[in-house]
Image: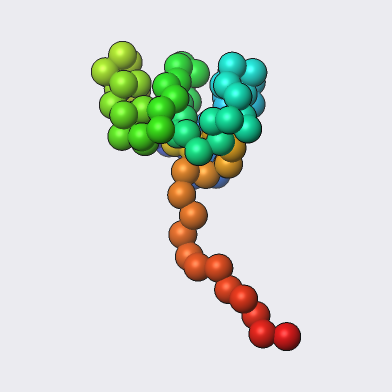
Length: 91
């Protein structure tokens, strides 16, 4: 199946599965939690860097065909960024 046809949920599921199987065993999750991981969800190739741009650029340079099929997340979190604000509800 062409990865371009995947739903957003399936794209994310595959990216996170590759992270758990291939990336997590090779990184210090606690020490590198802030770093970004760019993952080619078709080939399972990946790059890790403190900069999301550097991680994705290195992966695209090494695997030009990865363009359009890169899942980006942080080492210590399921997502690369958080959108929204924290709220402190008044008691």
